[in-house]
Amino acid sequence: METARWYYDLISPFAYLHFHSLLPLRERMRIEPVPVLLAGMLKHWGTKGPAETAPKRLHTYQYCVWQAGVQGLPFRMPPRHPFNPLAAQRLMVALDAPEDAIGKAFGFIFGEGRDPEVEFDALAERLGVREPAGLIGRPEVKQQLIANTQEAIDAGVFGVPSLLLRGQVFWGNDTVAWATRFLDEPGLFARPEYTAVRATGVGVVRA
Image (tube, rainbow, N blue to C red; front, side, top):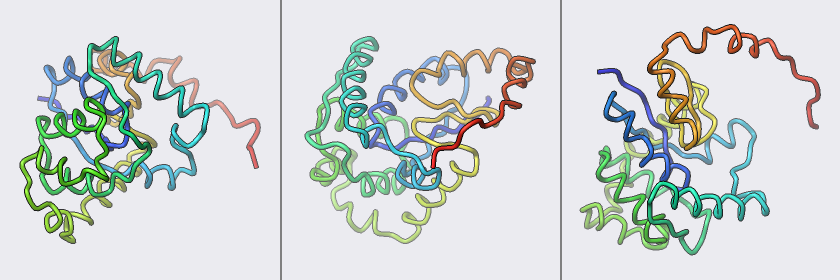
């Protein structure tokens, strides 16, 4: 069975939506979830997250409310956002979190609207971990999260959620149909209209 890599950070409500919209692809291929730090990607690429621009922040949250309704998912923003997801992401690494655990974590945050930073022990307990501090403090766990993030950057991933399929990055909750088409048509990106855009030059660079 074909394998793809799915890069996610629990800070992202879009990753919550994407996690649930990937079901049709999961039925056709193996999707390996990879916890990363969105902040590390943003720093590397010199970009901002959607919550860092005031009007975009509200637009993002309201769009997620609408999209969750379309997908039939419960949705509630935690009382603070963005929060610091570092401990939660390390917990995902330490548990080598399978889909069930990831679903529970996303449900805790965006299904119930709970803060995984302030309520970290409650999140850990939800995942069956009673004493998470020692688990997430292991050097190998910290290093693996860093390595995961660097792996994503090296693959050209610039945000979450992102699906890496056959070397192509599909970023965002709205790219499932595109990824499905690529799965059906392996030569999609070799079409002339796709290769032509590679030659597009940069006109203006903001200082």
